[in-house]
Image (tube, rainbow, N blue to C red; front, side):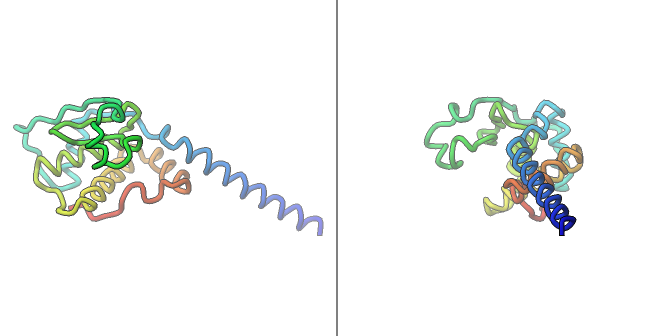
Length: 172
């Protein structure tokens, strides 16, 4: 009887340890994602175009990328269009990509997808499909260039609300 109690205690401690790991990693998951400066922006856009099956036109300039505190930058009228201003980490608008100062490379890739969708007329008609495609390509990018970090974020931190953060959709 005592051996069974020890085995049950072992499994309980193991389970509780996993719960703690999920909470700690989940809270700090953004630390595992590289900064936008980790890769050349042109290489990111080329990856996006390749994922969508589009040839880039060298005559089209890449959009400038501006790092701002988007919570202060975005007018209140625009904030209503994009949800809570505190949740906005990136935006493609006016032919520019705006990143929040805390944004990581996944947000830059997401906004690069919107640039390619807009510039090359390859955007799905429905807004949610545009977003789903952008997150699907972002997920593909992270799995391709940062597989260990992607696995850490996707698998361990997934239990802390990261599941479904990147959409699952067909890339068109």
